[in-house]
Image (tube, rainbow, N blue to C red; front, side):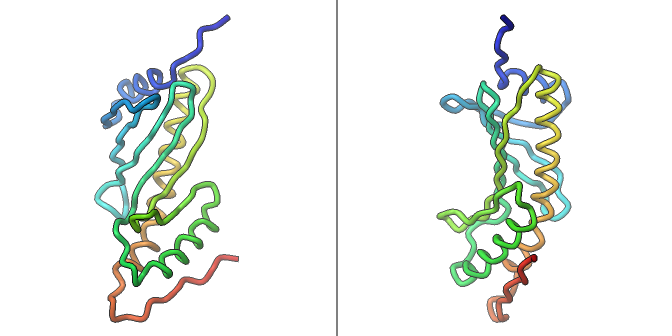
Length: 155
């Protein structure tokens, strides 16, 4: 019977071999990789990639922090619109009023397949995250004196 892969080791080695810029730290039974990614609308996207040995993966990225209470309802509408447009990711407003983009998936197969899956998903999700930034920032940067406009829902 073939030895079961430890996907944490596989992906860490793949990141190093492919010259990815990252830092990592071990949590209880997972490893958290910090991946600074290029971004069109922000200086960088600080993407968090969390992986356990069995291949369970989580991608997390905060795109805005401390949304003012007065803009909370309108931001929830923006988030709902983004969730309708990009159904495969989740955009949410957490308890600190920060806007979080999340995506979960599982990797499988040998080291080569796992490396390709992770690389593809990280680039894919970071591109979608970058597409979410303008809608969030437009509302966030809107003057407090301006009437806050709620975006039209996608059909």
